[in-house]
Image (cartoon, rainbow, N blue to C red; front, side, top):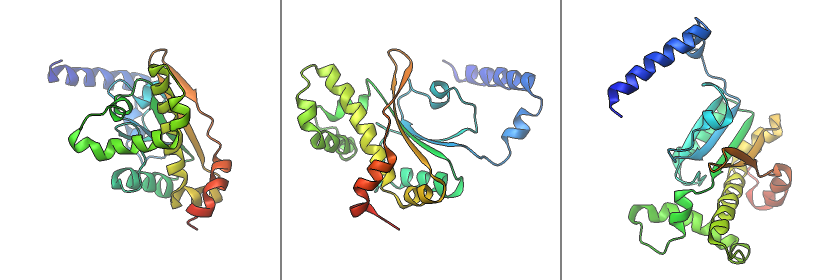
Length: 208
Protein backbone atom coordinates (compact mmCIF):
# COMPACT_ATOMS: atom_id res chain seq x y z
CA UNK A 1 0.00 0.00 0.00
CA UNK A 2 1.38 3.40 -0.99
CA UNK A 3 1.13 6.08 1.68
CA UNK A 4 -0.95 8.25 -0.67
CA UNK A 5 -3.73 5.68 -0.36
CA UNK A 6 -3.78 6.29 3.38
CA UNK A 7 -4.56 9.97 2.81
CA UNK A 8 -7.26 9.11 0.28
CA UNK A 9 -8.77 6.76 2.84
CA UNK A 10 -8.61 9.52 5.42
CA UNK A 11 -10.55 11.93 3.22
CA UNK A 12 -13.16 9.25 2.57
CA UNK A 13 -13.45 8.56 6.31
CA UNK A 14 -13.87 12.28 7.08
CA UNK A 15 -16.62 12.56 4.47
CA UNK A 16 -18.42 9.50 5.86
CA UNK A 17 -18.34 10.87 9.42
CA UNK A 18 -19.54 14.32 8.35
CA UNK A 19 -22.38 12.73 6.41
CA UNK A 20 -23.56 11.14 9.66
CA UNK A 21 -23.09 14.28 11.75
CA UNK A 22 -21.89 17.72 10.70
CA UNK A 23 -20.39 18.35 14.14
CA UNK A 24 -18.76 14.91 14.47
CA UNK A 25 -15.22 16.30 14.68
CA UNK A 26 -16.27 19.25 16.81
CA UNK A 27 -17.58 16.79 19.37
CA UNK A 28 -14.57 14.50 18.96
CA UNK A 29 -12.15 17.36 19.67
CA UNK A 30 -13.69 18.05 23.07
CA UNK A 31 -12.15 16.62 26.25
CA UNK A 32 -12.18 12.84 26.27
CA UNK A 33 -14.24 10.87 28.76
CA UNK A 34 -13.76 7.18 27.88
CA UNK A 35 -15.52 4.45 29.81
CA UNK A 36 -12.83 1.83 29.21
CA UNK A 37 -9.10 1.46 29.58
CA UNK A 38 -8.15 -1.24 27.08
CA UNK A 39 -4.78 -2.99 27.45
CA UNK A 40 -4.17 -5.22 24.46
CA UNK A 41 -1.54 -6.78 22.25
CA UNK A 42 0.36 -4.86 19.57
CA UNK A 43 -0.48 -7.56 16.99
CA UNK A 44 -1.46 -5.86 13.74
CA UNK A 45 -4.44 -8.19 13.29
CA UNK A 46 -6.14 -7.16 16.54
CA UNK A 47 -7.73 -3.70 16.78
CA UNK A 48 -9.64 -2.68 19.88
CA UNK A 49 -12.32 -0.50 18.30
CA UNK A 50 -13.23 -3.11 15.70
CA UNK A 51 -13.50 -6.11 18.00
CA UNK A 52 -15.40 -4.11 20.66
CA UNK A 53 -17.63 -2.36 18.15
CA UNK A 54 -16.97 1.05 19.68
CA UNK A 55 -16.29 4.54 18.38
CA UNK A 56 -13.28 6.82 18.97
CA UNK A 57 -13.50 8.36 22.43
CA UNK A 58 -15.02 5.35 24.16
CA UNK A 59 -11.76 3.61 25.12
CA UNK A 60 -8.33 4.78 26.23
CA UNK A 61 -5.98 2.29 24.61
CA UNK A 62 -2.57 0.88 25.44
CA UNK A 63 -0.95 -1.92 23.44
CA UNK A 64 2.29 -3.85 23.83
CA UNK A 65 3.67 -7.27 22.98
CA UNK A 66 1.43 -9.90 24.61
CA UNK A 67 -0.67 -7.36 26.56
CA UNK A 68 1.64 -7.26 29.58
CA UNK A 69 1.12 -5.21 32.74
CA UNK A 70 4.46 -5.12 34.55
CA UNK A 71 5.17 -2.80 37.46
CA UNK A 72 8.55 -1.64 36.09
CA UNK A 73 7.13 -0.69 32.68
CA UNK A 74 6.62 3.06 33.11
CA UNK A 75 4.65 3.21 29.88
CA UNK A 76 1.81 0.93 30.94
CA UNK A 77 1.92 2.20 34.53
CA UNK A 78 1.61 5.81 33.32
CA UNK A 79 -1.29 4.88 31.05
CA UNK A 80 -3.05 3.08 33.88
CA UNK A 81 -2.52 5.99 36.27
CA UNK A 82 -3.82 8.55 33.79
CA UNK A 83 -6.82 6.46 32.75
CA UNK A 84 -7.90 5.55 36.28
CA UNK A 85 -6.96 8.64 38.30
CA UNK A 86 -7.43 11.42 35.73
CA UNK A 87 -9.90 10.15 33.13
CA UNK A 88 -11.81 8.16 35.76
CA UNK A 89 -12.52 5.19 33.49
CA UNK A 90 -15.15 2.87 34.89
CA UNK A 91 -13.82 -0.38 33.44
CA UNK A 92 -10.37 -1.82 32.71
CA UNK A 93 -9.97 -4.54 30.08
CA UNK A 94 -6.93 -6.74 29.55
CA UNK A 95 -7.42 -8.45 26.19
CA UNK A 96 -5.16 -11.16 24.80
CA UNK A 97 -5.64 -13.23 21.68
CA UNK A 98 -5.09 -16.79 20.57
CA UNK A 99 -2.16 -17.39 18.22
CA UNK A 100 -0.22 -14.63 19.99
CA UNK A 101 3.30 -14.37 18.60
CA UNK A 102 4.68 -13.04 21.88
CA UNK A 103 3.36 -16.01 23.84
CA UNK A 104 4.72 -18.45 21.26
CA UNK A 105 8.11 -16.72 21.21
CA UNK A 106 8.32 -16.94 24.99
CA UNK A 107 7.99 -20.70 24.82
CA UNK A 108 10.88 -21.17 22.38
CA UNK A 109 14.34 -22.08 23.69
CA UNK A 110 15.90 -19.33 21.59
CA UNK A 111 17.90 -16.25 22.51
CA UNK A 112 15.64 -13.38 21.45
CA UNK A 113 18.10 -10.61 22.31
CA UNK A 114 16.46 -7.44 23.62
CA UNK A 115 13.12 -9.27 23.83
CA UNK A 116 14.41 -11.70 26.46
CA UNK A 117 13.52 -9.59 29.55
CA UNK A 118 10.05 -8.87 28.18
CA UNK A 119 9.31 -12.47 27.22
CA UNK A 120 10.56 -13.70 30.59
CA UNK A 121 7.40 -12.23 32.13
CA UNK A 122 5.38 -14.67 30.04
CA UNK A 123 7.69 -17.51 31.02
CA UNK A 124 7.00 -16.57 34.65
CA UNK A 125 3.29 -17.07 33.96
CA UNK A 126 4.10 -20.53 32.59
CA UNK A 127 6.15 -21.31 35.70
CA UNK A 128 3.23 -20.36 37.96
CA UNK A 129 0.91 -22.71 36.06
CA UNK A 130 3.33 -25.33 34.72
CA UNK A 131 1.51 -28.33 36.23
CA UNK A 132 -1.74 -27.44 34.46
CA UNK A 133 0.01 -26.51 31.22
CA UNK A 134 2.34 -29.52 31.09
CA UNK A 135 -0.69 -31.77 31.48
CA UNK A 136 -2.05 -30.51 28.13
CA UNK A 137 -0.55 -32.78 25.46
CA UNK A 138 -1.79 -30.84 22.44
CA UNK A 139 0.68 -28.01 21.83
CA UNK A 140 -1.88 -25.70 20.22
CA UNK A 141 -4.29 -26.09 23.13
CA UNK A 142 -1.43 -25.55 25.57
CA UNK A 143 -0.58 -22.24 23.88
CA UNK A 144 -4.24 -21.23 23.94
CA UNK A 145 -4.44 -21.94 27.66
CA UNK A 146 -1.23 -19.99 28.29
CA UNK A 147 -2.79 -17.01 26.48
CA UNK A 148 -5.75 -17.21 28.87
CA UNK A 149 -3.57 -17.60 31.96
CA UNK A 150 -1.40 -14.69 30.84
CA UNK A 151 -4.48 -12.45 30.62
CA UNK A 152 -5.53 -13.64 34.06
CA UNK A 153 -2.13 -12.83 35.57
CA UNK A 154 -2.05 -9.39 33.93
CA UNK A 155 -5.49 -8.66 35.42
CA UNK A 156 -4.03 -9.56 38.80
CA UNK A 157 -1.17 -7.15 38.13
CA UNK A 158 -3.73 -4.43 37.38
CA UNK A 159 -5.49 -5.17 40.67
CA UNK A 160 -2.18 -4.90 42.56
CA UNK A 161 -1.89 -1.18 41.71
CA UNK A 162 -2.82 1.55 44.17
CA UNK A 163 -4.87 3.38 41.52
CA UNK A 164 -7.18 0.43 40.94
CA UNK A 165 -7.46 -0.49 44.62
CA UNK A 166 -8.44 3.11 45.39
CA UNK A 167 -10.87 3.32 42.45
CA UNK A 168 -12.54 0.09 43.56
CA UNK A 169 -13.18 1.59 46.99
CA UNK A 170 -14.36 4.91 45.65
CA UNK A 171 -16.46 3.93 42.63
CA UNK A 172 -16.42 0.15 42.25
CA UNK A 173 -14.26 0.06 39.12
CA UNK A 174 -14.57 -3.15 37.09
CA UNK A 175 -11.75 -5.35 35.74
CA UNK A 176 -12.25 -7.66 32.76
CA UNK A 177 -10.05 -10.34 31.19
CA UNK A 178 -10.87 -11.20 27.59
CA UNK A 179 -9.36 -13.29 24.82
CA UNK A 180 -9.99 -12.56 21.15
CA UNK A 181 -10.20 -15.60 18.91
CA UNK A 182 -9.16 -14.39 15.46
CA UNK A 183 -10.14 -17.79 14.07
CA UNK A 184 -13.80 -17.01 14.74
CA UNK A 185 -13.80 -13.25 15.43
CA UNK A 186 -15.36 -13.80 18.84
CA UNK A 187 -14.40 -12.47 22.26
CA UNK A 188 -14.15 -14.84 25.22
CA UNK A 189 -14.84 -13.44 28.68
CA UNK A 190 -12.60 -15.12 31.27
CA UNK A 191 -14.91 -13.82 34.02
CA UNK A 192 -12.24 -12.39 36.28
CA UNK A 193 -13.51 -12.40 39.87
CA UNK A 194 -12.15 -9.02 40.95
CA UNK A 195 -13.45 -9.04 44.58
CA UNK A 196 -12.16 -12.57 45.22
CA UNK A 197 -8.75 -11.85 43.69
CA UNK A 198 -8.50 -8.61 45.66
CA UNK A 199 -9.36 -10.41 48.88
CA UNK A 200 -6.74 -13.09 48.20
CA UNK A 201 -3.88 -10.70 47.45
CA UNK A 202 -4.57 -7.84 49.86
CA UNK A 203 -2.48 -9.31 52.67
CA UNK A 204 0.60 -8.74 50.54
CA UNK A 205 -0.42 -6.09 48.02
CA UNK A 206 -2.59 -3.72 50.07
CA UNK A 207 -1.47 -0.19 49.23
CA UNK A 208 -3.92 2.03 51.12
